[in-house]
Length: 202
Image 1 (tube, rainbow, N blue to C red):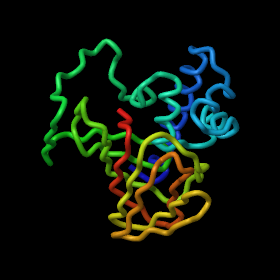
Image 2: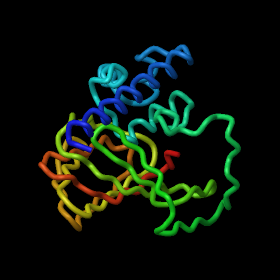
Image 3: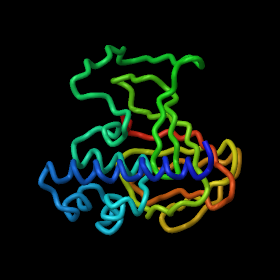
Image 4: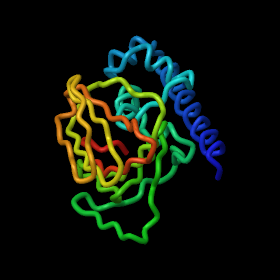
């Protein structure tokens, strides 16, 4: 796939997420103001996401999904059908082998790979995140839970309460997610991060 093909694919996913956000919001009879109040994101930003102008990160999308009472996976093309029987999983333990197929979600400049199988009684969401350079910077915001990020390669600009911190390979950040924060790749190379968030998004 060429760079231009990749960008077109990203644009299509971005349009899909925005269209589904608008549809789910209208199905619940909510205005953008209602959704902004519930999700903690601004009306202007949500409007831009719905119109495909701005991208939204997975954690921010999780706040929107929770506000709309939908799962995050339902905003993507490969979301499972609602009538699929749920997989029976143990509540206290999961074991994920390297050869197991990896579930992947793409949101804006960020590609998220799930690092563990589902465990309904477990609260951590471990992810491998590839952050492409460029794109639009998301506004800082807070949400429930905790967040941890460890940089494997590249550089990451992490904003916490209005203060920017540049992270290099081996650096990490751990915070209560209620504190307004955002991350951005302002370099010319892909940044790869191990991220762990609570509560689980999927």
